[in-house]
Image (cartoon, rainbow, N blue to C red; front, side, top):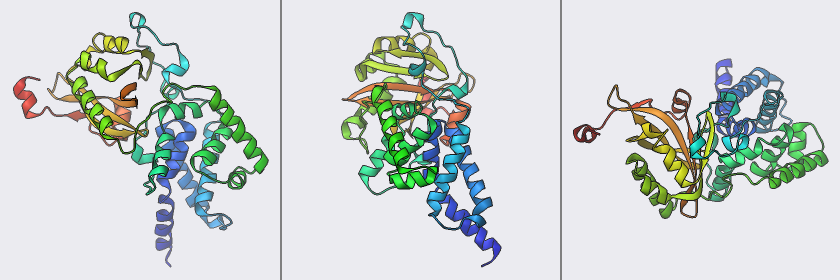
Length: 337
């Protein structure tokens, strides 16, 4: 076999694991971009040291060992990504102020396709989606780095305790102890949004709810939107630390500080195991629509309980392979919309 063929075969073997490794690193780091950087670093390290890989474990296990070490190194500074409700109290509309915080503060959204491998078992697919939802991701960020790795490997990826112990160069007893502590920490905290219950695929009721949401949002019909929001619904807008509770404050914000979003357009996306939308707001200069936010919706009992808008379009829209601009459709131009 020529060196060129061997290199091609190795590249193909490594690439088979890119999506699941990205999912693992994303759960560890809470950042879509850092996760992709970590996986790329993992691939480079694996490629460079493959001649020393003696096959004492599977290629997959070896890659996870490298990825874990990369993530632990990146987490050594102790940074913990969060959501607005992890950092501040909910603000009433009367005191709403848009105060941004640095990018590294925030838990970031991630397209499903980049972190969820295709699986045939519906139950396995549902567990995978639940494990990247924002509330669970936020809960993971509260764990020390090694506990986080143990919980993900044992609870999400279903590794055996002996496999995790070998990966982390520790004992089975230590792995079981770390898992117990991690479970206890998560159980102590009732995270906002943990009650989100979304079918996979969406059931008919949820599909209709989303259709009504698009019509209400694009029409900026606050009465219709109020009917879709749970009375304790939460709205967040990273990089701003403001978060609002209740449909009255949410719709009140949208008609005041957020009024520039009237006549926007939404395009569906699959994000963090939940339904979402790419939000384009009117562009006065071109007459079309410019990228504005990626929305993630949490649904429970037929209502929207979480409405999370990730701004900073230059980062998110390319990540989702979305254009930064939409042209106005002919019927919208004709109607003056």
